[in-house]
Length: 161
Image (cartoon, one colour):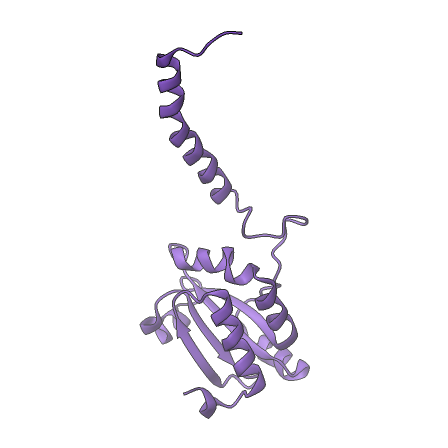
């Protein structure tokens, strides 16, 4: 059996952090955490921002969940990798909401309207387009569950001001 020299040991030891970093970078950039590992499709069926979404919400007696994002937004990606992959969040959304994602660059009127809320901006509307509640920044999964359940149980704008 061949023994490992001290020089070779030190070379291997110095290379491990770079190897680990490259492995983690590959996992992050591959998008593997943002999709269902079995189907490689997004778990939530995100709709585009349009008046039709509100008609659908009225017909299905659901609320509209707007996720206003930006390409450069790190916390938007973090919500995709954590909050929007949490089974509890997914369940509440699928039963009570029509999820809508809008990029601020594609919808400048939304970006202007919610400019004080940073990104991501989470806004919930009723089927008539009445804003019920809005939150700024990253929402942890449990906070999102509490928010979504509270609004679904009492969708009155006055209840959430």
